Image (cartoon, rainbow, N blue to C red):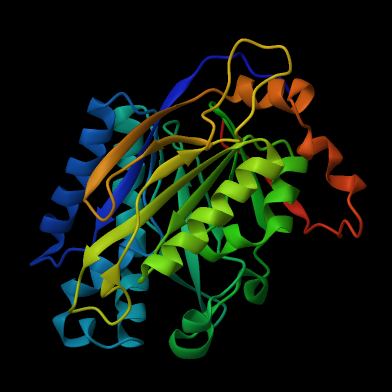
Length: 311
């Protein structure tokens, strides 16, 4: 697949978990955040993993209950999606909504929903569960409900999503690379600096080996009323491979960090993505890890990918 070379602005949220008195207060927050992203020129806005858990505050009786909060938030995902869809259309923006629990076939899955400005939408369910999700919280992996890894054809290019822990597993991103993805979105939620560090390192490794852009958006700050997202550490960032085309006149930064926010501060981080750079690197980079993947000893079988058209 070829790209026009037209760059676009991506906005990555460092997103605080808040408590709300009512639905209108939640709506006002999301609207304000999207308006700020649009004012910064973004045509793609990325919210973090489990950002939707702040909706649990609308049911104070269950907000402090780890399992009860799942039902509260899952029950509010439909109106939340309607809000995101309306904002995407109003601002002519693609939006990856803050992920949250969705009830499917007797399970709760962690679902990130992608909205296009033309009214189309789709989603990616988290594939790999952390110990907390699996052993304490009862969140099921995508495989439990037959939900696949997806690559999304958009007006911006081909995009894939690796939710937090998923970014630490190379075969997931590799399958997306082979399906033509040039941008990997990594919404994250980590309660320790070490957890954030793991996702950051995973994201940078995926950028390196896939010769692609990887964009991370974390939750930040404290929400001590919530047992699910009580403490949050992270910094939003856009990563690329520390390379450039052989003999070319441009290079990504030597550390691969194209943009990064201030640790744990609520803010948008803006950066520029040009998927033509991915195409050029994969063909003419100083090294060619995307091409050479299959040459490594023990290159594994990749998960299947479902293509979704959001154009």
